[in-house]
Length: 180
Image (cartoon, rainbow, N blue to C red):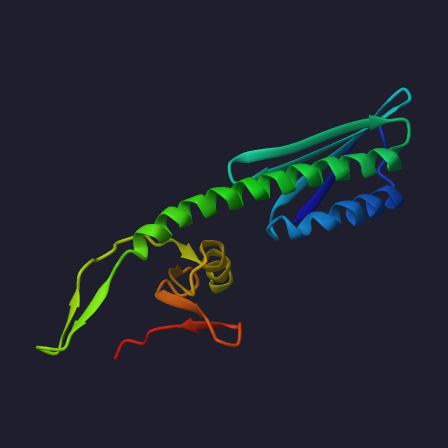
């Protein structure tokens, strides 16, 4: 995340800047590396106001706090914005879980049978699904969210179809097909 600090009627000192970066730096676990975080500090008489605005995938996460001490206001706004980010992240995960659960129930209804009489494998159901570009780490997270032991995805880096899978030792594997 990239923290941008602005001041209205206040000179942003190195101490205030360091405190903001320390406090809001804790939020990087919720945000992508290039997410802009705008912090606006303002002073009006005895009121020290801090506003934080974070754009996330078409939404805005925003918090505003006012008190008589700038450092206390920074602490309050950090707590508020973290609560909002946790709530937003939980909402996204719940949506993905619900979508994956319906996908999972459809996908794993497929039955495969083997007929000994004519040594032919019969596939009795075929499942189609859309794949979206992502990196292998995101695919592992998606796989865990839906409770599968494998996940097919379009690798955003190579633009090829890949598969991640859970190994018996609990680690993850990546299958990258090679065309001959």
